[in-house]
Length: 571
Image 1: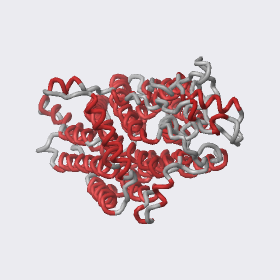
Image 2: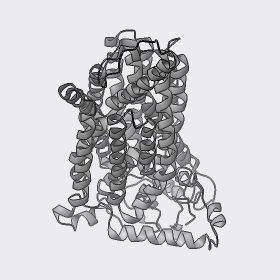
Image 3: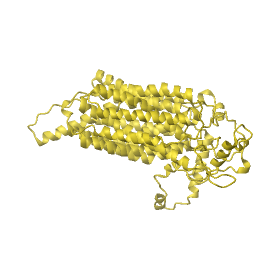
Image 4: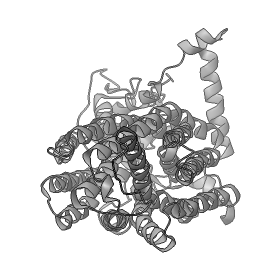
């Protein structure tokens, strides 16, 4: 099999199973011929001519091109055998991970607003100190951490904060882009748990640095928080943590249910973002210290790491880990010896992980590549906007409406409560009603119509939300727009689920590593653009950034209509 060509066909026409022939298993002749065509790279097996159509399945019905000619029970998922042989306390399941993951996400969501406001107050303190040095007769009000601080609501401070958070995202994004694909590949070879522990350790260390900078503002520069961003990026940040959670779910969840499983993890994320800020607001209000919530977050991260290390079973079997290590070793040997560090550097290709999104070997097709690229592109756009808009919304609401940590946290909680409701209630209900699992439990047949419908509806509502942000001039309308955007939360897990249906099961880590790379790049590019726009337009036409975000979402919505379904869809 050619490296980077995940769909290389190894079955031969003479060895096709009866169900592929379309005559002995209830399939019609055309359907069986289409499957054969899919396994031969789009060539008709007898004429040698291209025979692709929009109805041609992207992969054979066993979800693999391994050449195995033994019959497969279509009602069985190929990961079931491994799970059934394990005792219950060693059997991987998303229900082991979701409860402690919610706790970790509560910590993650709880510090979003306080961290931005802490950075704002530290930079404001620094800016006002500079002004006093220039004009000793100038009288300024002291900056109270966690207070209202109206003296900080000026364009100069807002611009500095936007630039600072931009630098932080750049540092984290660049380092995460370098490490995330490697960590994803390592999880294929050594298991999901060790890499999840590493990414959690990075989040823990980041908050330690933030606490030090906030506790000793006169001795420790605010720039040390950038060092915290660097630590987080090296460890993969929450981007890798989210990707590995998806990989864990993929290992132990049948493909037909993966969008729901991914929805649970996204629901956990947005539960943290919804409930965490309001808990943080009351913690800060009761303790009178903005740093108190960071201590609570440290305890939550430590609890998650202990639960992960001691109780949660590994989802990747030893045999699959060994197989991945052997494949990696064979690939390294095929590259030939690297006698010195110069030759080793020549083998480094930062975009190599993205090859999984553009398969070119036997068994691939233009339809497959189109779907993978478009889905990955829409996912890149959604994630990038989410990362850049979150910070801009908090800074903008402080400037436009005078919202403090309490009001901003309440807004974030309301908006994300709507997202959680859609992810934990609406998405599973819709999937149960419309997505019957009778067809292809292996799932690697590409996106079905239900996936695409959910994605299109979600992206459309996100577009409406950012249009609402653009035209809103009161806090109430701004909040209503955010609630409308909550429906858009269903897009990301559904896209990830759809992507996994386009690759074989032994490439899940590679695929999610590639999406992790794209997310890291999005964390670099999107904040650079949109926070840069906010920085130069604040105080002039401040809503410019939301107008640009609306247009970007509209483009993503248009792209979803070029993704074509290739699976079976039953109502």
